[in-house]
Amino acid sequence: MKYKDIQKLSEKDREKKLKELKMELIKSKTGTEKQGGSKTRNIRKIIARIHTFNNQNKLEVEKK
Image (cartoon, rainbow, N blue to C red; front, side, top):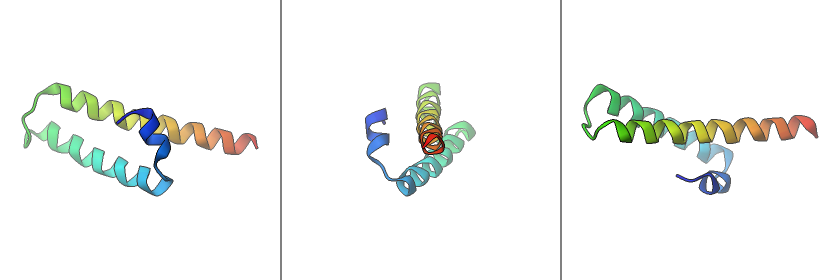
């Protein structure tokens, strides 16, 4: 998921996607899905992008 895709999502959709990704991350770490470490790394990057976008939006709202 690219940053532009995250920008298009509503706040509720971002929270829903974040929960889905966290569950997927847990599954990949426990070994139920053995697809290597690259998938885990990509999931963590997407989670970080969503958190970054949420924090930037929060800061913009506080400045106004």
